[in-house]
Length: 333
Image 1: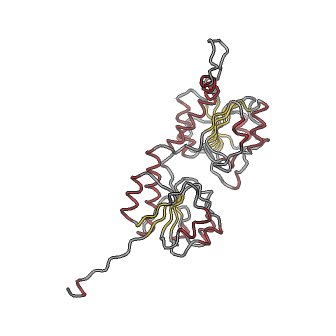
Image 2: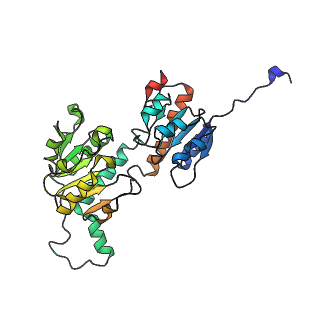
Image 3: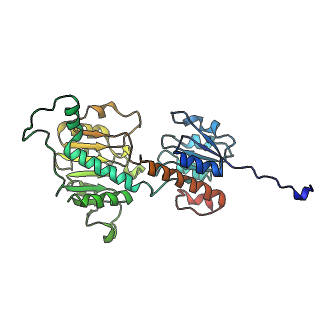
């Protein structure tokens, strides 16, 4: 065989995934890359730099904290990052951009799933289903009485949506089916056709005063951390319910605890917290509280779609194609 007839195989790019996604995602990844899966149950954290040696791309989990030092320590072989999440507050995006490291996330695919869970939490808070279930499980269910285990109907309750993005709008559509009155606060007013009849408030305080139920859907940004603090909780009508499907750092947790114990907040439904998964133990002592372990995107369909979207971004980078889920497009200039 002449040397001209010989072909030299191009080495496949290597991808490190710092978790174990659904099998369909693994199959897709292995079709395009040599894949390394991080199978330990703990976040990879400071070990990322060592584990990423020789890899061209890294797909991280939301529990992996990539601060500036971690990103700076990544081997030069790493050309692209992706995160298995919509939120990217666990990644120092400025540090990645300074290193000209593209970062991709997974927008859009979990909107409906999170909105479903938000409605579940609103219903659970209104009917105090956690307390009712505990009554049954602990054998304390007695004879029927007209005033036992009373909750609230959602009909005509005022729902205040803090953050009217895709998820907030999906929640609004669902809430209309329960006869709720809609209010929202956003950085700017939406076009009328996207408001679902909701009343816009240009201040958060103004919306809170009109909210029998507060649903937090805003993004985690430095400006919004602790946005729901003691002063703003005091703006709510007494006995209002608070639901959070966004990020834990939007809420001043000690202020919320105090408001629940005082009865200013009547019930809560939370899926997100500070310092997950090692949350403040005071959460567990709250009355009238439905607490879930950050499962807003936890359906087989959504977690699979998230992985596929992340891989779309990584593959688009190596193919030189534009991608809508690129968080720092300035890295492509």
